[in-house]
Image 1 (cartoon, rainbow, N blue to C red):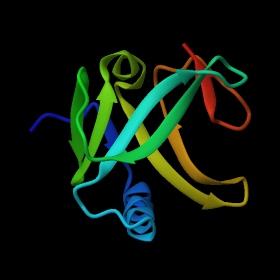
Image 2 (cartoon, helix red, strand yellow; image 1 turned 30 degrees about the horizontal axis):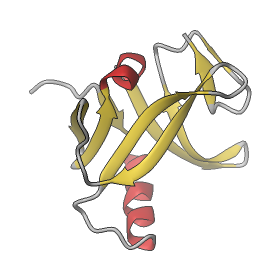
Image 3 (tube, rainbow, N blue to C red; image 1 turned 135 degrees about the vertical axis):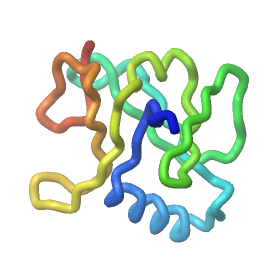
Image 4 (cartoon, helix red, strand yellow; image 1 turned 90 degrees about the horizontal axis):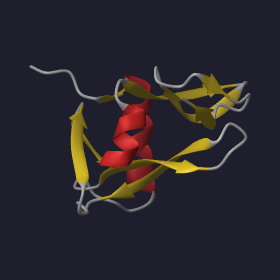
Length: 112
């Protein structure tokens, strides 16, 4: 079996399920992950729930979670793992992106 281009950690998986339930989405909803211009390092991650494939999307699935990503964003995200941290240094989703050459202190933006 081929390894997914974008992975979801076990901790992120739990919080995706919680948030999906809190926001009233059923299991047909996956994540739309994209890279947009902005942030102190030049590029930022955007994460939303979605269940509709758009033209040019690539669909990745890991641990039962569908991830919708456009081809431009996929170039920046190949090999990335979506993780979740609930610690004192920052609660929320984090991207472990091997393609990022530099990240900002908050971890929400990066450059390549």
